[in-house]
Image 1 (cartoon, one colour):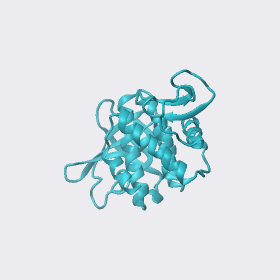
Image 2 (image 1 turned 135 degrees about the vertical axis):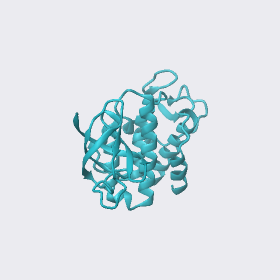
Image 3 (image 1 turned 180 degrees about the horizontal axis):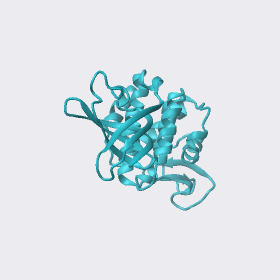
Image 4 (image 1 turned 30 degrees about the vertical axis):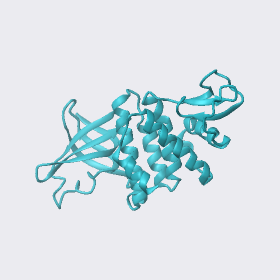
Length: 239
């Protein structure tokens, strides 16, 4: 069966001396595809079957087996990301994180993942976008934050901080000397959770608040997700 799919190559594996197996992440999940002869110099697939190619792929679809690649029509070459080591490091990390999320949920996160990548490629702040996707993924990973009321008593007023150990907002009556964060940090963490990534057109947040949000999420991920990704360690060094 001939099938047209939109997706991004998240992994490539050499097959013999001339071919590649490519794993394409699509809104239907991961699809394994054989790209015959794609490593040869004269192959039209040589450049379009590399990791992070975002395109429309025409394949001979074989359920539960490797499909066969027929053609590739690149949608966006992600040139800005691929020419910047910092942005490429964000893409590496978000891809690795997304693949971990895909393993743990039946829900589709493809649209949010692609929207984030395209916004980064357009020049929007990669740290903010990375944190937005991270906070959205927490529910899929089974460790979501409570961001509508106090995690201890359910109060919706007099919120004074957010605490990773307790998993959400803390009101003044339940406060037990947890680290206080800026009100703007709490406000934005909630906004990150609910905002539609495709709708974002401008991101202006102070460096201090960005760093506080990033520190909170780094600590929370390290403590509760059980994910230890090499790409994240490298990204932390760059940051």
